[in-house]
Image (cartoon, rainbow, N blue to C red; front, side, top):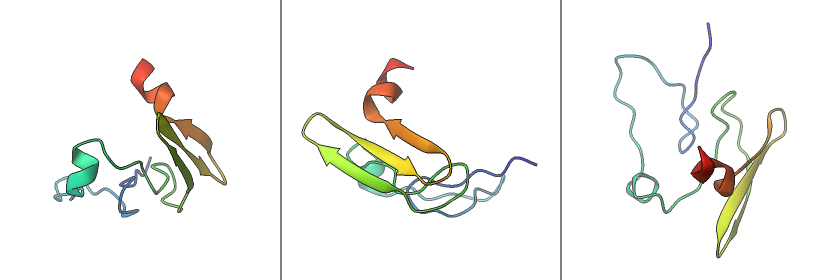
Length: 69
C-alpha cells in the first residue's frame, strides 16, 4: 500500500477522513514542511521568487518545478 502524508501537517492521509490544510497553505502562501512520501520534516528555504524543500530520503522539490506541471 502506498501511504501519503499531508505536506503541511505531516499526518498520514486516510481515505474518507477529512484532512485539514492551514489557510495560508490553501492560498498558496506556505511551502510544504513535510514530505508527502514519508511524513518526515523537510529543510525548507524560502526566497522572494519561490521556495525549495529537501527530504533526507526523497530529495528536493522546488516551487518552480510545481508551476511547470
